[in-house]
Length: 386
Image (cartoon, rainbow, N blue to C red; front, side, top):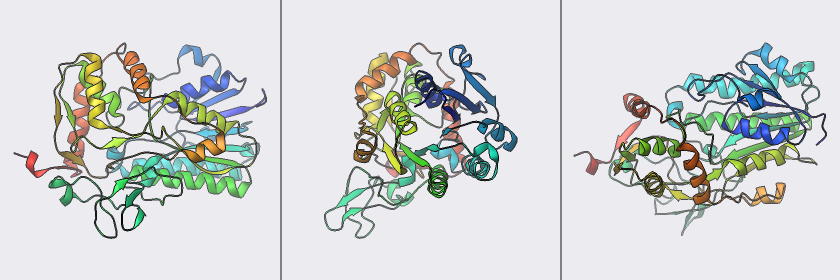
């Protein structure tokens, strides 16, 4: 990449954005950030001093057309990270999630299409999400690869948490989900990320520029928000463990996720920004491994030598998925990169960092659960209700 490259990072003051900015600055790029410092996520209303001196910051919402117009002047490449996150919260703050994630992206693309400020842009890298898959890929002994429907409240109330074959209702085993899996989002957040990704890729294809939809799995690592109670079970569990509060596990604790370390996410994103040649499409960015939620809780409790009680509650959130593991073969073939940080090492790095941060208000997580309950989005396994 030439030293003259100017890169706009929307939402660049966040967890991924700050780490990405450091990596791109080290390559000699000029970085501009637009961010509104949403209080739900950010603990500070400004960039750290070591970044602020090297980065042009526009403190504004991506839906503010004049601010976005200013942000795009002279830009060669865009990394679009700005979004509201949180699957549960999205199910009742529907207008806000569509406004930020969809309308914010529409404002960006409209300017790129119709305003001189966007004429120099040659590549867009969008932060997509594995949430667009819903439950993702499973294998049925009769029907082969299948893509389950959303789990029913009635089934989960009797403790049947595993998805079933959508054709024969037989038991199925989860598989790595590839980019060819159909869209099947099960939360408003997932739906908005699908629209966001497809809008970016459609625009890039029409304009004839590079377009990447990076389907991040569960990103974690030092520097992530410990404040937001709606996302990040590692942050939530570490806050509770450090305060010796009960750690409540949804469902039966065997639900699993693909956790991908921040350094691997940044490397995949940098390689997308630097990509030479033509590419328009989606790439999974994950570890290709899954870890159960109850194993995570135990590891965190042990690390802090916490007195927290781990409670498997049987409670569940409507819109949650059961398992997640990414097929990352396309990432390797396209960017010549395989995320290599093993979860135990990444978790240790995160917890070492978290131990030196101020614990967040333990009431915030309870408040987020109470909000879901009040909106009718929580359920309870019948055998756990007594």
